[in-house]
Length: 133
Length: 133
DNA sequence: TATAAAGGTTCCAGTAACTGGAAGTTCAAG
DNA sequence: CTTGAACTTCCAGTTACTGGAACCTTTATA
Image (cartoon, rainbow over all chains, first blue to last red; front, side, top):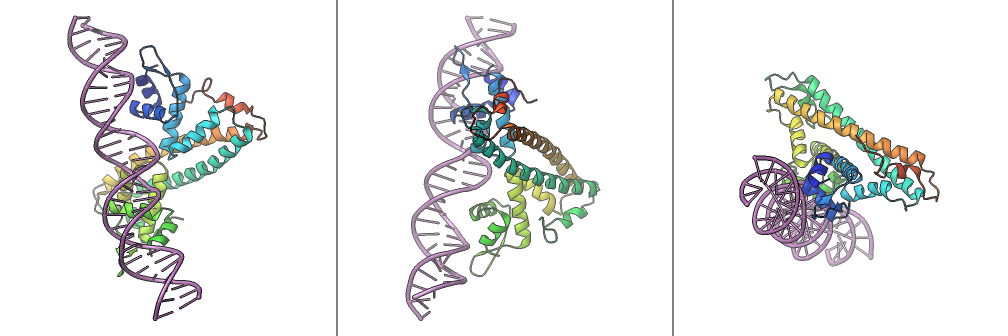
């Protein structure tokens, strides 16, 4: 498929997809006319990149995560070690996100949402009183 | 407290903290010697920035999130609307992170972790067969 | 008290990860 | 056969830092 379709399916702009190719994150085929030709496997890779980037992993971390899926030559002890390290990081991100969500929820549920500017939660969390962790 | 202590407490490099001041995300006091002097409120702001940045929110989104806490002049209906929009996004991030974690867990639990390079999960997820969503 | 190291300051240049735009090619519709 | 959308490469600009120089202040040690 062309880059437009790959873009739509992966949620990444075409520009970004070309950039990812430049830095060696994928290597789509080329059709006879010079157009890039993306396989489902490429799209899967791109979706994965879209997700993990949006979740705060660096491109290099994404490259490492991708290597867990793609590099069959890598020894499995190695794969396991990398995956376990990333798991710890993901669990931390999960609990931080959960905490952020709970705070915002609290904000939403306690704000009356009318025009009165005295939202009680804003006062409570403005920094003087509340310290997270 | 000095920038070094603020850096340690927030988990952000001093360089980044100065940069955040440059772009108007906080305004620490100055001591008589010209050194920046951070309050607990500043540190709280910085920790918040550290977290939300590492979770994939842009600096502008962080600025918006911070405004939920800091800007008491903002009308509460406005606060509520912004918070609700961010909540949707956070919930999406949460489910994506959970999915990523489950995939990696599966990888860890099914890899034998010895020197044999034939980790069965890698084959399964290499892209040809498996498509997420 | 001298002095060296550690930690602070500004400023400027470099990097990471895109992003926009120009200039040209190819394809699909009318 | 032409017009417009989608593709190509290339180069410049932006965001969010990050490293380094040159200098100042504080603190520990001789």
